[in-house]
Image 1 (cartoon, protein in one colour):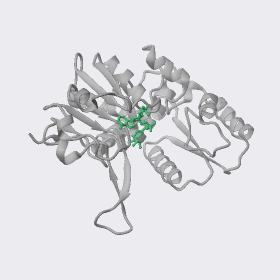
Image 2 (cartoon, protein in one colour; image 1 turned 180 degrees about the vertical axis):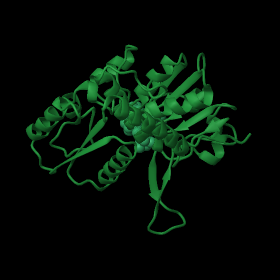
Image 3 (cartoon, rainbow, N blue to C red; image 1 turned 90 degrees about the horizontal axis):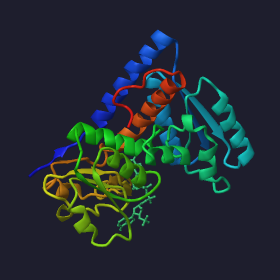
Image 4 (spheres, protein in one colour; image 1 turned 30 degrees about the vertical axis):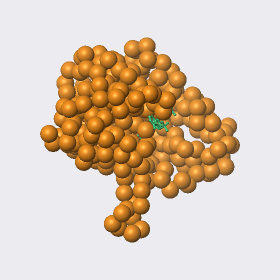
Length: 299
Ligand code: NAP
């Protein structure tokens, strides 16, 4: 068997197209422009790249993008004062602080300061609790993106065995909750799981979010399974000196001989994350104004 490749880059483009159309309608019919505020503390080069990509895509879908840059030594009180001002600003519907932040700042406290209704990263305890209790909140962007890809591939997932490798608050736990909502039978595996390969072989849906390059081999994959590779490991490029290359948690060429469908790295899950950040901002905006939520862009 040779697996179908799930093209996350193309799918993210489709999602952004849907968002653009919805934003245009909101402007025309309601006079409302959704707004996303991004806070960057310090000058971490990787964060600079992510923030620039978020700004570009926010503007491209017709939303307002507000960037706030603070020095690396900004006192916590000053950061919190900015978050408080953004919480109170009606033109801002989504707020995110780009992580990592410098060591003197506590990421959990930063997230907790953001109004949960504007927490478009879905990382707050309030939004995690709403997801876990089956209520409506904002869902962490990468798991939401994986859910969209899986819905597109599989439609109804009811009764399927799903295995998520990784139990982080950022990804593994919310992914497990989303699959449970889809009526999958969910196993969340982690570094202490015994017979991990055996556990993975049960999965109709296998989602890997570990950060260990090419750990999942073909003999971990049930024939006909759908495989979602979230992991990202950057290595020196074997053929291009001075360049780097991204590897996923799944040995793509090997697993593709067994799976029914599989995401590549890069070009699979990665592009969905910013698309879902924009989807969450649109959702937050619609909720703030008591308007109908965008179809197909929420959990
Ligand atoms: P994390 O917080 O480091 O969590 C990694 C998880 O993997 C932990 O639950 C850990 O188990 C588990 N693990 C580690 N070694 C293992 C092993 N040998 N066998 C089984 N499980 C093992 O990482 P994360 O934030 O969830 O991210 C995971 C990966 O996804 C990273 O590569 C990250 O870069 C990538 N990622 C990509 C995107 C995207 O946009 N594409 C977004 C988010 C994350 P314990 O809990 O027992 O330690």
